[in-house]
Each structure stands twice: as structure tokens, then as C-alpha cells.
Length: 340
Image (cartoon, rainbow, N blue to C red; front, side, top):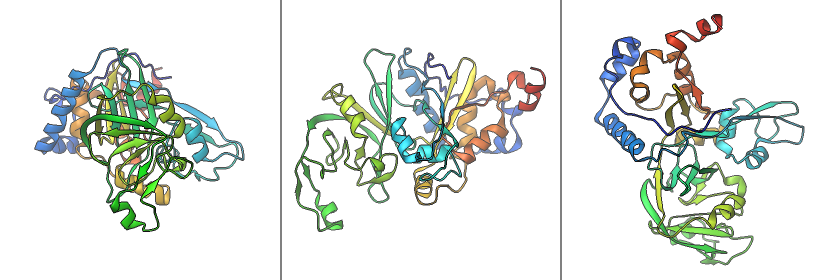
């Protein structure tokens, strides 16, 4: 079980002292790091500095489940607070609808917090999750969500909650009715309302997060830009959301944190790769942008201990599972086993 008692540590400093220990490919990548990478590192450092020390680095703990014949990954996702893309990505090669009996399913129920201000609500589009930072300074709720599809992208940036409504009425945007002329102009509260039973409106006009009457859309890119949650999740969170609460939306497929002297890495499919997972159950392998740069920045003086084979495998697979990637005393993984 992953302990959750350390603050986020994602210090974005250049790993100059350990540069010579990097493999040639990583040296080349680090040398060619762009201004964009530097900006990313600066934001990461700022987010870490702004965080409260009581919040954990990683929320939750990993679990597994052995299937019975009636199970599907879709049903297991809802039961264990996961979205479709993340449970399918964590279990490559498993049929999401008919996995079969006696299959050991990985439940990615541990999550590294995104590099963002630890305040109010943080939404990470890449892992398709919402993080709710409670005012006690130590508790974080995390829940899956559905986001906008191609052409209806959920925006990134910072806004705030401007109002919230139980049993909302959906005033269908003209753009949505143009796409589907059979939709009425107004959808009243009830089982046919796609907003579900709870809606939270943001400072961005026409954008909100809400429940849904189609829970199988959670963990997918299927909305017209709004964010949808499982009905039980939005109902549980609704009373604690306050008008004026900040909402930060980021898109971070790669998350890293240092905890108890170990560097943890978690990588999710990009939004385009998530579409591939939706369509085929797998994605085209590719490393995240600036992968080596961001990893060495987070590792700092521990750069020479990075298990690059393990890290690159995680980058290509993008299973969304936090894994430790520092070798013990600089030994390779197979060498570690031989001395234990």
C-alpha cells in the first residue's frame, strides 16, 4: 500500500550535477529542452511551493480484483471509483465488456496529485479526474470524470464556482442543437436531463460540471466541453462546494512526486491516445513531451539512480499506475534482487 503522508515534491531544477550519469539519449533530450519545457518546470515549482504541507503526494492505494463471470471493466470502474479509460489502460489486452472469470484486474485507485495549486478544485484532463482539496489542509477527494471530445474541448486555466443548482434545467446551447436538431431548447429536471441531479456553474460561460444520466460516459471524452461525474460522486461533493471556490483545469499526462526518498512516476494516455483506447482498447505508444527533462528535473540529485528502462517502459505503456523508478544505491533492478 502506498503511504499518503508526504507533501508533493516536484522541484523543477536543472540536474546539472548528475547530467553526466544520463544515457546519451537523455543527454540529447535535456540539451534540446525548449522554452516550453522551462516554462513547464517553472509552473511545477510554483505549484509545489504553493502547496500545503499537510496534503499527501499520492491519494489512495492500488488494489486488484479477481473477476467473476458477470463482471465487466465498465461495472468495476464505477464500483471502485474509476473511469473507463483509466481501468482499460491499466489492464491492456483485457476485454472491457467480457473479461471472463478468474481474471486478476488491476484497479488504478492510487493517484499522484497534479502539479497545480492545492486549493479548491483541480481537474486534470489527462487522467480524467477531479481533485477536491478540503479545507482541513490534509484531505483530498478524487473522482473520475468525463470531458469534452474533439471539437468540444474542455478549456484549461483557472476560474471559480459562480453558482450551483440541484435538479437543474438544461438550456440547450444553439451549437448543440445545430449538431442535433431534434433536441428541444429546454430540458427540464428528470431522468432525461443529461445534467443529472446536480450542476455546478463556472466563471467560464457555458461550462460547468455536473452529474449525468449516462454514467458509462464517465472516464471518456464524450461531452460538449462540460465535465460529467458519476451521480453519486457529484451528490456527495455538492454540499461542500462553495460559491467563489477556485477551479483549476490542467492537462498533465505525466505526474511525478518524491516521497520517502523514492521517485514515483504515473503516466496516462494523452487525450488523443484516450480516443484510441475508446475505439480500440489500446493506444499508439509514445513518450510524453519533454519526458527526460521533466523526470531529471523532478529527480534532482537522485538523477543517477533513475531506472531508465523502467521509466521508459511506463512512458510507452501509459497504464496510469504510480510506480517507483529510483534504483537502490544506483543498482539495476535485477542487481537489487540479487542482494536482498
